[in-house]
Length: 143
Image (cartoon, rainbow, N blue to C red; front, side):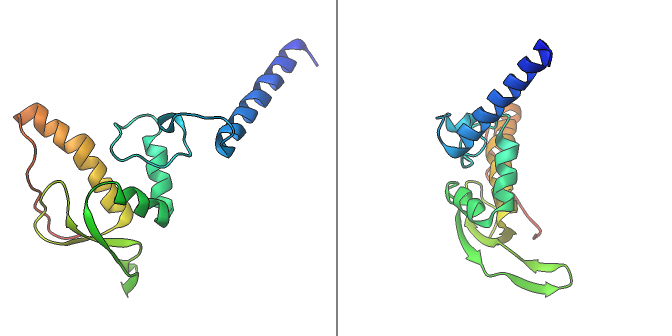
């Protein structure tokens, strides 16, 4: 093997060992830089937020844990099929959120979590920047 291949092999092995160490918890990494750390819904979005949101969307327990951090008041809704391709799975009924939305609203946990992240990190900063005030309420037509 040539010297360049040995260096490439050593770098790949070091990278794999580092990833394995972070994944197993042997190497301490701040949560914002750790792709396996739970989603912090209050932290500003960064380069790993999309990955952490995707993990929460795929795992109902992880989604509910993230949703519990939001401060929104909600109740879990039992899974229910209402027709072909219709119904509720991993759903919640929102009773209160940081922004008023006009009555109870039933959403899937991933949708409720995405709503909170959008409201906190996109809608409110944009409203503050353009109008000098926060959005007080959102009218919805159902989900």
